Length: 286
Length: 313
Image (cartoon, rainbow over the protein chains, first blue to last red):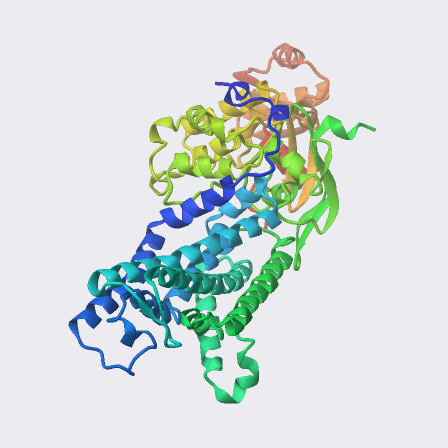
């Protein structure tokens, strides 16, 4: 078979301006990889354990995380309680793994040079990688919620939901609130992913980038717990994450949530640009 | 002198400095369109660094270059789709199959038509003899198979230029022959091929042009016959009277005469080999063997550098 038979002539290969093939290929790489599937499996363990242990015991009101006491009244609270448990480490670790892999992983196995030689423009590469991180972040967070909601509804049933502000809303609106809270957290984690993307352009060791993301995440939580640093708190990347509970007020308390979304957008923008500044003229020798 | 479009690769003063070391030093590489250019040099002589600069993977410290007549890296988006490349060995996702890896490469190419991906991927795999192993994980591939897969990756689209960095690394003699054959057939299709190697003999047979790198510098380049012409053929006489034979050769005008036990070697110059044999017989010197040796590229390299073809530091 000759090259001429393999494909049409170069002139007949027009540029495809809008194509989602690269992004879909990224998502296949992420979600097709055993390691990541196992990671999603682990994320699902928390809501299952939570639902089952609460079912087997009688929680005393007023103790434990915010939503734990409410679980027996509405199964949807398993989703929210699971998110509040996993937001400190598990979900940031999952997003950090994908983000750390994004550039450093390709550099580590050498596929980065072949992507750039195709050619893939470096700006486009960073844009697609960040889009994939954001999608993974949303999917992972929704996955935790979904497993939590399914387990909770199976064990405790649904029905009217009692808001943190005291009132009650129906099942339909309650599901919507849970979805909104989940998407909010997913976007927050994606901004951590932007930091990971930047770190990933600094190294050829993906695991190193992942560890750095997790350390930054934990560091942010620690700084957030030191009262003497209260002036700093509102600028920390993780500070507004726990505000996702504000979706459970009637009406939704948008004040902190808006600050949280702006903070996430700010971190995402700054670190995506930092990644671009770092990567756009970097020598790729790996 | 010549139009830029005449050369598939043209570099001017291309230089790359890594901290203290100058990896590539003012290289003016000229690869005419349609040539099979053997880019030769020992390991560490700067071939791969030069190739990385050609493809825009690293920035030259100074100098500039054109690919297919267009300035790089400014026109990378237009030029690189017409360039197939294999740089510093194969690299694929280990947990994907060979086919999935090629599909991945194709999916990031904005010029690729997704409707023909399957046919093109299978065609490329077929051409390197991997179709039967297409659904094996890359992790399970041998080094030779990995090398073939990387070559298949360059064949996913029609190319005007192929840049193949050490394409025969890790291949057995049969695989090496196949790659040589493939290079020949790509050239027959009209592509220009730039092929680097640290094994001189391997490349010698398929190249129309060669360039020789040594410690970051391009020592010589040109059509293979011209480069070879620099070193003249030598006559080798086997005899049991070497001293007499040497006297005859000297009288005939041969130069650089070396006498070993039972063998005399001299540079022929403009002489016709027949004359040498006739003169020896005429003088009554018994000749048990006679040969004219074209110096190998290896000899040429030694004469250019004063060194063997070993790793440059």
